[in-house]
Length: 484
Ligand code: 5AD
Ligand code: SF4
Image (tube, rainbow, N blue to C red; front, side, top):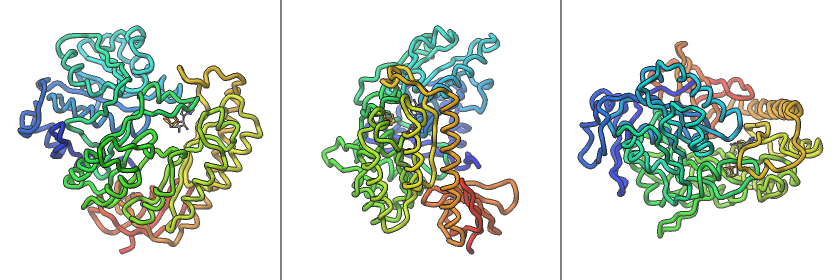
């Protein structure tokens, strides 16, 4: 369904106080070719006089939002965004290295530039592959000029100034930082939902995961700064915010207010104009009753929790260094299922972790039956550089991983179909975020984050909250009609 660019805004923030204003992206890019019309509060440390940039993002929502902030920095320097790498002077790839396949994608993109017709273009690799591969990227793809990991984005203005000054080997690769990446300006792509990073990095040490290496240590943003940004987003017309973090509920407020994560959720939901608050991803170890109590108390907190389990076998969970057992995880699920309103739960699962026996895998399948997830992202284990799992014996053959994945996905598909079918006949509030080319066909999301495709005789529904009755259900989405 995809989001439209309609109403996309650029937010100007005067650091360090965090005061900001939002302007529509189209207004900014056409009217301010060199961002000269930016408000007086804003410092523009350079001007690329009408140079253009293209940015492609791979991976998670954190990356998507990082790209919005990087785009904000570039717009602030006078670059103009274009839709194709061919049309751009500056081409950025914001990369993901969570699994081998994701990491390979960027090298296939970089391969397209070899031909030589791209002389004069500046190519930058950002994100997790940049952090992981570092300067080796220059060797593999000598036409790359910038390699920068997410923990160094704060330095982007300086790095860009170096690039603009003619330096062709610019890097930002430190991870030992306690800084978060708060930009003076953020270009937001989604017209109705605003992402907001509240905690960066990760201090957990899951044996399979590159994130602690690529995104650095955990660091939370002070709650007053988060709340100020939410107020500005509400003023700019956003009614839905999504709080982001690799382990969002491990949030520890560094400000003297020392808000717990649940208190922060309540405070965000209490901002005038905010109708929906989402948060992702939660780590089971830091998931407590207080969060469910907050969801129960305040309807603006969406009834959806993404709680990755990774495996249903305590033995594998221990090998994965996940810090909880199957039983402890199921206790967290029980907390959520005991909420006064139904809260949907989704998860991530890895099959074929080294040493995973058929019995372990069966335990994962039985956990699916017990947890009754509303959605699951499942993956074949992919060995990653620097991770402890690389050294583990007993790798599972690719073919076997594929077999397990197919079985698991089929089991989960059936669970979702059955769960979604129970919703037929019920009406839900959706935020309308998509319009089909076919007249009268729309799409929206429920508070539980289900996609609901529906028909309506009304016009101009985008961005509105309306009631839709479910008439049909599939495993991944619902079909319904506008209740007028
Ligand atoms: N192999 C397969 N899946 C992985 N994930 C993280 N690292 C790996 C890996 N090495 C999955 C986990 C995580 C999700 C974002 O990606 O399930 O929750
Ligand atoms: Fe990776 Fe584990 Fe941190 Fe999630 S909690 S980002 S899986 S190390």
